[in-house]
Length: 161
Image (cartoon, rainbow, N blue to C red):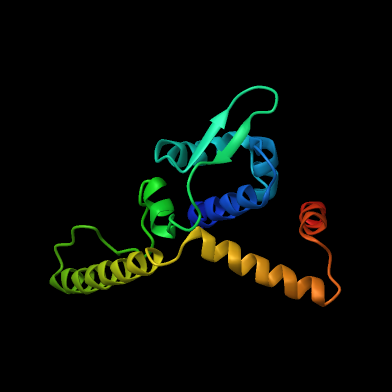
């Protein structure tokens, strides 16, 4: 089963935007995700509606963060995406007549609800600023080990994908 990576993708894009200088075009951000700009714009629309980003058309336009990194949690971003399910666990039957299946489904459903509640609580404690800080710490270690700067890493990662 293919996993939904929209949440991770949007976080990736938001950090690229936070590190960039000025507006980021849909083409630039889509290239970072190796996806089509139309797909990227669809993802970003929920963030725009939630006030996390703004967009401007035309020359010099693009996507801009409109939220404060230290006040925006991963839960805020998740909710801006429409709060998709975080735990994917399928059931053999949705409405089984079998009493065994009913017992199994109830146990699994309760476990999924508890896991999602715990995960949402944790996402509410992590800010975009924390992700940015982690990125900068990793970049500093990378540079100290003789690695390239961020822009060169971006270019290299897009060439090798």
